[in-house]
Image (cartoon, rainbow, N blue to C red; front, side):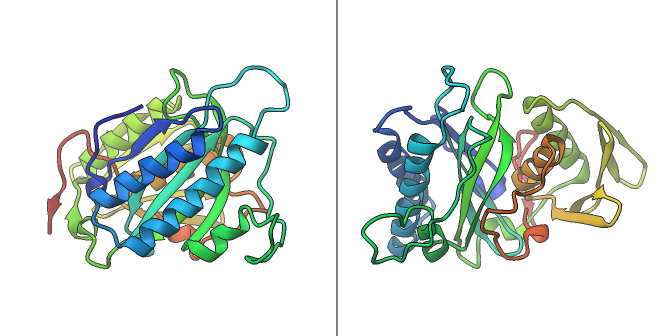
Length: 268
């Protein structure tokens, strides 16, 4: 567990291992409640988040066990903020059962059973699932995340931060290396940097990361939104941007997040 509370407005990320037993959902609720309270979010948003993370962690506990039957690491809870397309808190529960995909049952909110992940559509700004890699394990173990987004205030401080392209490029390079994907960085006199990953170049411009995962698709994310950039790149290298049976958040191609080990960003 990472006890330090990072600066989410400057792109920090919270990442914890959850208990791999029936206490896992309660631990997820407590950790998310503590984080959202420190951010000063409203009671209604906090309660929506507690309900959503309880369902997500419970689903990971009951259904997301690898089909191999071998011992597996516990699930993880990740929390970060993003600024585009709107200020939002992203909450992800990671598990190691990539072959077990989440499905909604179609049950209504008043049904006694089968509501499960369907609640995420009612109480969050969007949710989905995608392949990813562990953040807390000693090595980048593959798995999947089920994530949802919650609204942040319109005056979220991260929206006013600026990040130098050089710092952003270095942080992206380090973040990808921690997920087991090494690359290298190059730059020019105009301050533009390029992070060269296997088969993919990420251009780090004055305000945005940009890359082409496919010839017909162009992705652009704010520099302050490093975490979503990293997750999108991990999905790319794991072979899928997003699974077709997961609910989609609006404007998926415009989402983003950031982390700042090389020093703070500064307000505009």
